[in-house]
Amino acid sequence: MTDHAITADGLTKRFGDELAVEDLSLSIPRETVYGFLGPNGAGKTTTMRMLVALTEPTAGTADVAGVSIANRPRLTRRIGYLPADPPLFDELTAWEQLRHVARIHGISDGQADTRIETLLDRFNLLADADRRIESYSTGMRKKVGIIAALFHDPDVVFLDEPTSGLDPRAARTVRDTIADLVTREMTVFLSTHVLSIVDELADTVGVINDGALVAEGPPAELKARADESPDLETVFLEVTAERDGTTRDGPQTDAGGPETEGTRTDV
Ligand SMILES: Nc1ncnc2c1ncn2[C@@H]1O[C@H](COP(=O)(O)OP(=O)(O)OP(=O)(O)O)[C@@H](O)[C@H]1O
Ligand SMILES: [Mg+2]
Image 1: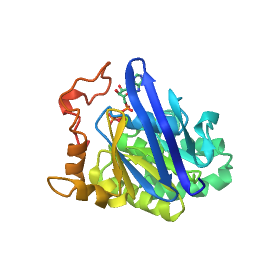
Image 2: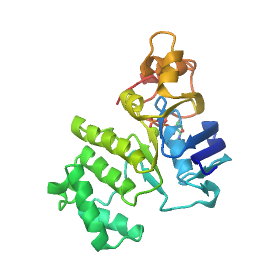
Image 3: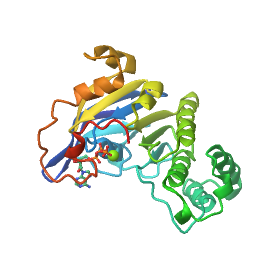
Image 4: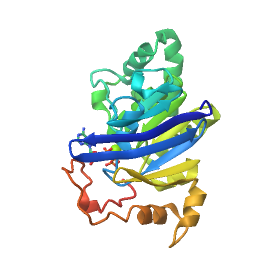
């Protein structure tokens, strides 16, 4: 138990008739990177929202960083979360926003400022730190969200598509940061459509399709299973192909719907 950062047993989420996540079980060792893949609408964000206790499961249980999600451990210092669209205060500057994050975690302004400066510099945002977030580009907002998720040095961090909207240099910084987090004893749960990130960083890959985990294992092991050629794209296309062409029940609210054939591999 203690050697696992995340365990889930039978995690299920239903939205009306829609089964977004179905009987998901996970067992993720500490200080590893778990790469979570799946087509648009597969259930990645819903899974992460359950694991950070923002969405209540319809059934099932999970423990994250030693705490049961049933106890709704909001704002626990042990968990960090980067939502796909990080909620930021438009009227604040990045510096003010991060001080706010620090205060939520009980970190004084004095202590926070050194860390804010280091992190903003790392993400090449220092020159813009005193501008209001409303004037930021998508990628700049994302960077502030990433810094906010990591600010309090959590044990387990959930990153929902951390590189979407980032330019190549910023994406590189995020990759390097993730690699560095594990050396600092963090566990990273990462959803992405960029297969090369998972290939490079993940100790274990999980592929979710239509709410169900359809493949799981180290990248090399999954690649070896592919029929066509030994790469993650082939694996992804094969294990998510089964339900292609079938119509899902319920409304499709995501921008990426059936027209992407559920197999888009980068965004
Ligand atoms: N609040 C909600 N109410 C109703 N249905 C929802 C809600 N949130 C998610 N869903 C549905 O649950 C399913 C899974 O959505 P989810 O956002 O978890 O997918 P995802 O794997 O993160 O997709 P993407 O790659 O597009 O981000 C989708 O069919 C979606 O429409
Ligand atoms: Mg999502």
